Image (cartoon, rainbow, N blue to C red):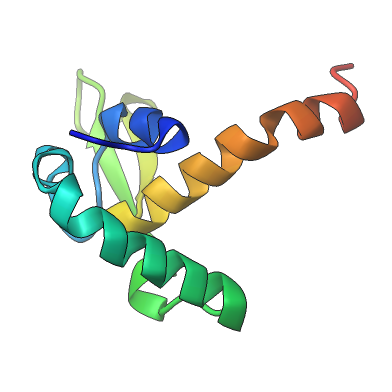
Amino acid sequence: MNLPGEYRPCLMEKSLVLNGIILDLYIFFWNLLGPDYFKMVQNRIRTRHFQQEITTGTIALLLKGGIRRALTNWRSTILLSMEYKVYTKALQIRLQFVLMSIINVD
């Protein structure tokens, strides 16, 4: 698998996704999907618009354990599309050093 450095951690993160595209599928077919993915991201950045299907999130509740009727036993999460998760993670990795220098930890 030949991934650019900043995208490698994006695809290695395990989490739920909205559109059901499995992380392993992305990793396995990255050589085929990667060039089209980069074109899509570049086009979206240029037009400043992502399709609604990519940016839509769904709130899901996950049972942590215990009694189902107790609200404290549930954890909320937002399911995003895999395309959006990879894009935002790569952006976060690229901006983390800049953000750390301008955001005060306190």
